Picture 1 (cartoon, rainbow, N blue to C red):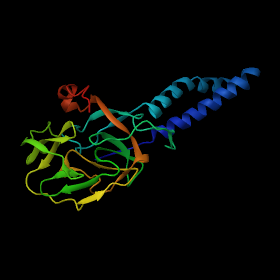
Picture 2 (cartoon, rainbow, N blue to C red):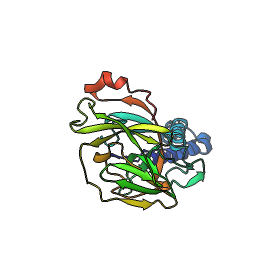
Picture 3 (cartoon, one colour):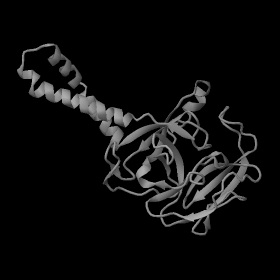
Picture 4 (cartoon, helix red, strand yellow):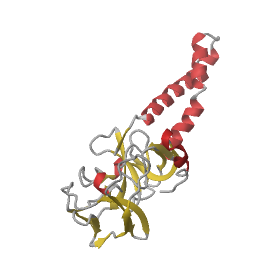
Length: 260
């Protein structure tokens, strides 16, 4: 379900501060002095500034890599998938502090988003948006279907799920096509009734979103931890750029370039 998030953004920010200080020290102080051990050191550190500035800018404002750590988004995303997260579709935010600088858009039903955990901000999670502010959302425990403003997200073409190598034991899982508006995607459910979640219905308040995993009976999501505030959203999942598990190398190559 989750990916333990090492705060690379903070590390890059600190590296940017250090190299910037070194560049200023070399540019405005040490260059006017005779060369010594400290001037050489600051020059070496300052040389990394352009690279760190470029990486920091791309990761903060454009794209961020994310590794799928579990089976909660199967069958569309598998353990071992690496994806690019678009960070500018849902507002451009200030690095580190995450305050909105420029408004660029809002998540829509069907979007796959990465966000900081409601329970632990140091952990990133990936789920699919099912309802947006103002929507009334209801989850039917028996049919496992989602109703938004009285309209059901239909489940079509049920068939037994074959699995992908040893991701999970696929026995008893059913693959279905779910429609949200004009878009379609695959989901998984278990055979029979499965009452794991207490959630039944609510109206999504302003600035929040209701999201679920595609592996519906094996996902901790808004049915359990609640709604997702917009300021926690990292970005929109776009494309699988790599799949890496030694035992699935050839099969994983086929997943590269899959758009979400």
